[in-house]
Length: 149
Image 1 (cartoon, helix red, strand yellow):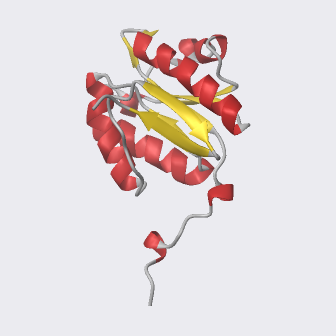
Image 2 (image 1 turned 45 degrees about the vertical axis):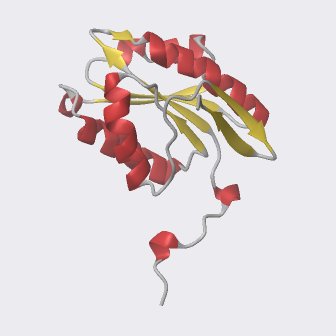
Image 3 (image 1 turned 60 degrees about the vertical axis):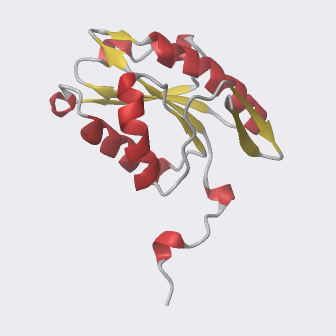
């Protein structure tokens, strides 16, 4: 008997690069804008799309901004249940989206909120996490993450 949860993943079932877009006080955090640039580069190398994922309340007016910074599309969850920020609530929303749409890469900026939420997301999706990366690349279709020693 095998556990379906731990069966090998078919890489071809996963497409897209996502960037979690962090908002605060009615604007997008600079770190998320920087991650869109990284995501755009990786999406082009993988030959796939780049999506900005926005989760929050009263953020609909910001939904076009990720497009200006390189995203091909925006996934928006705007609901009062996402205010105030709770890492587990936002993280679970991101996990459910990822399970449904299956991106091959998710970038979350190393902000205080990102550092709180990313481990929960990675664990829930049964995937790896690398913090404090200084560069990213693609080699043979795999994401290469570079971090200082």
